[in-house]
Image (cartoon, rainbow over all chains, first blue to last red; front, side, top):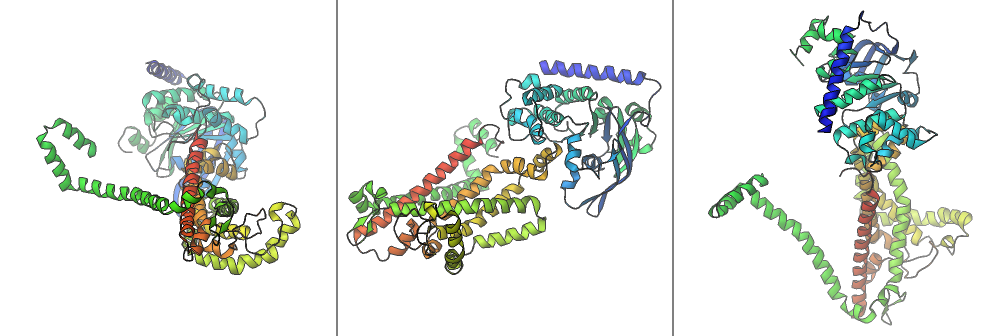
Length: 279
Length: 328
């Protein structure tokens, strides 16, 4: 019951926010806000098969950018190039330029890059450790000096999970529900204080109430973090993001403010997709 | 399938129960159930028969020596005095040496094959390793006699004596055959089991576990050692216990290189004897009834040791798996 009312208030918050967004005039375009990621002419290959074609995109700072498109359009692949996670897959190749705050990430030390660009995965994937150790993991490997318990608490609070787990920090993370596990994974990613958080369909395995919680959480995280989220769910993109990019067959078709993209799409293919004619 | 038929049974009047059973019989469900049950039960039957036979046939020896069998060190067929301790000692020492050598080696190789090697290389090496596991033990015994024993005499032994010779375990004369040589040959024999099983287990670790660690800024080694290996822990331990079971019971290769001398010595260079080796060597020559009975009791002891060590292994897996264990 309690969680249901939270869900309602989350939805109310979203509605209020959307109203605010649509009232905002004149609208800023992607180029006017400061840019965190600047991607130019990005090609990506799995072996001989090309998955991303000449993609150009700017991901603005402290905003939520969502990537939508039908299955297999390359949106997850694209997201995973941003922290070079695709390098763990054998026989892949990337071409083009990705600038993070003006620095080419392909030239950066990959470990340092991933500390700055966190990631949350489609399926909750906590480690087989306690809740506390899950959150502390990133801090420990990064040689964090300081009060670990304070930072764990802070991260769990940022992920809106603290109240539910503060009395069971040393229980196994697998004892949590799916939604709690996903928020734990968010807390784990936030603990190392990343500048960017990539979310790869974080809600696809979760129920609507939990999804609303995570969307509300994302909204609060914008103040400290840039977020990029891949989603199958167009309502989610419309509700929860500031900018939306539509991809099809490995190409970026359209990128705009969310309210504009969903109300006045420029490209007929975008319009066909968002009105549900395919995908 | 089975749940539906159960609810159906409960709802149906008693007369139709038989018909339902016959129906399932015709469909083959019940037949498959009975056949697989028989096969499963046969394992229990064989094990019980084995223990029963060993117990009954060792009656003479048990009556004569009682518990003293376990801790007397004399093995003298001429005066009919039999004690198992040197054999228990030899079996344990050679097995422990083999694990000390084989576990790090096997685990490291498995990690390399599963995590670092290109998939094609990994698969072809894994194929060779499975072949190694199937080589008859007498061949390993020959390898022991022609390679390990001379190496022991000329290289390994002198090197150990020069560096760690002050330790009692490396004291005494070095004949080339003995506990250490057997341990090394056993290690060569069991390492394929550890590599093969551990590699398979490591390959089943979900990729999102590894990616979770990497995405937090873990290096490849940190992700492997802190996340992938712990996830595979119980499977890796399983492979080690499989190796231990093989080492405890190995007969042919050990008897070819251990020196076959029922003595307890602190030195690992000294010749010794193991339970399996003495049974194989002396069974056909056992003239007296007590002699034969004692050898059979040794078999019972070996069975018990294997049983106990496997039980302990299970407990160890359960005990260390508590607190944040993955769902199994």
